[in-house]
Length: 287
Image: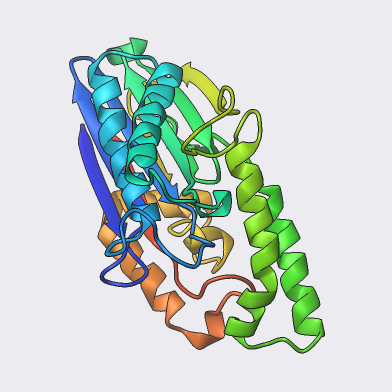
């Protein structure tokens, strides 16, 4: 088995992603988390690093504890969120924190269990991280081909503002802020949340997949920031990205991404010029 992990913020001192693995006999858990950019005016828990970073790191730690306790994926996620939610309540006791300031995150969790021809892959997805599987025959499969519908709403609103002549990024953000905050409140209060949040009001609306994991297969899991190499810049297809990462390594792929982010000609028409980017590449020992 070979494992590579890379996680880097858009800026050197700030990263709202987390990527890591948890190992146990007969089982490997690959977890990738992408914190949602804050839409609040201030941080309430961690002024130094930001509340989103606090949430992502605390959840990752709590999830590790849940996994170590032997919980299945559903129970592990809810157990970890419950622990972090209680800590949040303690740290904010006596202060009014608007619900749009509560941090959220996307997560994809790949569990590989068993051995040899009996290996199984179980996937648990919330939000828009991406997981690609290269099977033993070399075909690359998008295991969770989900598209965030909110992205289309946001792009349409940005296009409308541009048509109005609102081209300055600061002015555009100010005009978008009410929409973004309304969406964040919804994500934090909906009955079955589709993103990691502090106090879910029901079971998470996770997308789950289970399939055999044949010898010779490989998994590439990544945040949407890393996936820009495919869906924003068109540098790679899914297949060529997995091949490049397997041969050249995740650091080389990250360097290529940052090169395109600094190229003004390649600037995306909507959203951030640069984004936090994280990826995990797992290849079986017989790959």
